[in-house]
Image (cartoon, rainbow, N blue to C red; front, side):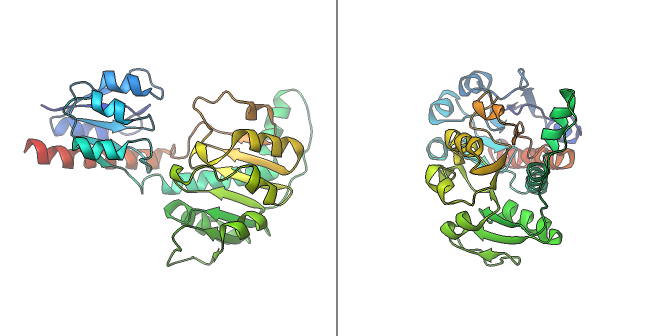
Length: 305
């Protein structure tokens, strides 16, 4: 029977169906023994002798893939595949799949939640009370704000839909102009950066560092940055300086530059940092796990039929 590695931090904890599907198909599997994000080197060791990997966000570089002999498929439990060296995968004949639809709603809802948290100081007030203080920070309404969405794909569009009842103006930028703008004004990158009260990122890691000293200088004083996409899109030092100086009012970061995050953004009360939990809604997680298993089984069936 073929064997696979499930390298995600957790798998099958909220619904046994994904693991049952593997068992029913006669697939042996090993779970992540460390229950944390694995290093590439750890994956290379744990995946020896496997026909496939149900992968998380760990690095699957060319060096890692070349160390795993006879692997047939990488099935990402998540939307992005920027952690996989696709060129090497093609060279080695490794099929790569993702689950782009599973986390969409969960990431979009967290994005809106971070907007509200930053505007109203919810986490900040909670921490203050736990320190024995009783302060009432003055915040802002979401209503009437201009929200700029960079990356108007599945998640960006879902954020737009969620914001429609809130009385906000939505502007969006995408390298490929979308056929359906859902009522958002499609603008240039420069216009979006200069006119957004809240700027939220929903693009690929390949876009590079978008929030940098140059773009921050063009942003409104008092603007807010939300990143639930990829850590490399934001210059950590530039964001720290901008929030500390008051140029930016705050930020909500679900994808910090490294994980686990121990950097200096933790020092700033008005920067909300979450532990890459965008897809961590039970319903979304179960859907992604089932889709990841189905993608993997489909590929393995072709090889072991």
